[in-house]
Amino acid sequence: MSIKVLYFASLREDIGRASDLIEDTGQTGSLTIAQLWIKATGRNTIPDELLVALNQEYTDIQASVKDGDEVAFFPPVTGG
Amino acid sequence: MSIKVLYFASLREDIGRASDLIEDTGQTGSLTIAQLWIKATGRNTIPDELLVALNQEYTDIQASVKDGDEVAFFPPVTGG
Amino acid sequence: MRLIKIVDTGFDPWKYQQDYQQQSMSGKTDFGATASFIGTMRDFNEGDDVSSMVLEHYPAMTEKQLNRIVDEACHKWAIQNTLIVHRVGEILPAEPIVLVAVWSAHRAAAFDACRFLMEALKHQAPFWKKENLRTGTTRWVEKNT
Amino acid sequence: MRLIKIVDTGFDPWKYQQDYQQQSMSGKTDFGATASFIGTMRDFNEGDDVSSMVLEHYPAMTEKQLNRIVDEACHKWAIQNTLIVHRVGEILPAEPIVLVAVWSAHRAAAFDACRFLMEALKHQAPFWKKENLRTGTTRWVEKNT
Image (cartoon, rainbow over all chains, first blue to last red; front, top):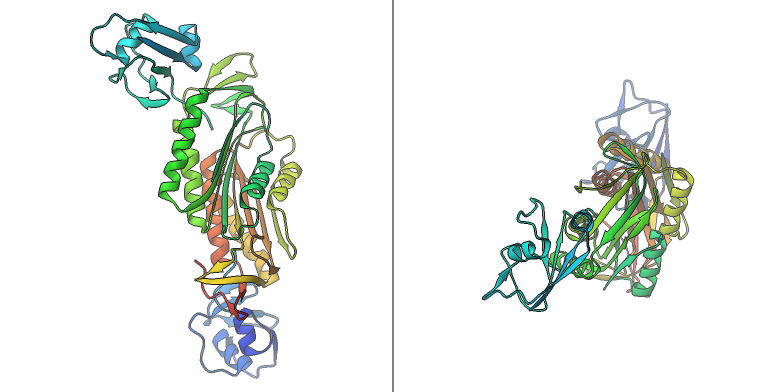
């Protein structure tokens, strides 16, 4: 399967790139966003204030992803 | 003494004029706005929802007037 | 700073805000929030069709009362500038009746003060509306919602 | 009706309101209230002088989230029209960042919905501010007030 991963703002700068494409995870069963975070970033810890969107809707790291999903990681929003 | 009395909106139409000038009341002592109402309008009853302003500030009919004052009578305001 | 204007012809509420901001805040970079309210004449009220309206006021008192409520807002909130424009005379549906705009550094003060000013204006400023109904009859608006 | 626009150059918040009202409400006489909010860039934040700012966003999600909060406002209040404009890219002090405007028949709905939309936008729409300080350093704004 193929998952598009996006990073925004300070997290993008911290990770050093704006996106990853995670292909054929080799997992049997479902992949959670927490597992995807480790695969994509190579980091074992998840930042305290990390926000997560699955296909442009807020979700949490326990959610599972499927082929074709777009997952975004970003810090608290500061618009307006 | 001389008191200017103003009427606004439906009360102006009801009274049939926009203002009165009440001169030399002949009162000994102070004149209240309630007394002024009777003198100016010739009416013995005071409308329930009557609003009163003394020199452009809200007041009530118990307030006393003095020479040169401007007293206005009007119904509830409906601007904005 | 404040500007309080009573106008007896149609006014453009957006141009008023733009002009007032240019005049009084040109070169300033300390305001972060502008909250505004425009009241517009509807063609219906209390279930009846209204074709036009005449707004009467008590000029000397209007100015005093509007200044008083702006003083009160300035005392309650950290606001920087206030603009109030109110129409009098004959008004047609879709025409603006009132504009209240407040500038401040942070948004809560602008929102709170703008709404406070509108409520205070409606309940304290000496304006009265007389409606000309589509049926040909005329009536004074008796209560403010 | 609604209009949601993300713009990457300066915009005139008053002209936007005027144009949107002309386009979507021309000939209409059923709206009585317009509440609006303009957020403007200040030259100070958290005690520091800010010379400019860059606003980043997540385009596909921004649009979805803004539509979602407008849906929510329409569900909660009897509002007729909504306009949201948000700036992205480089922004200088005194330039508008955001405009939210709501049209309704009665004023309470316009006031409530306008404020709700601004708060929801600030807490849910995926925008991020990076400040360029007068000292030459750069920092991401970490929290929304």
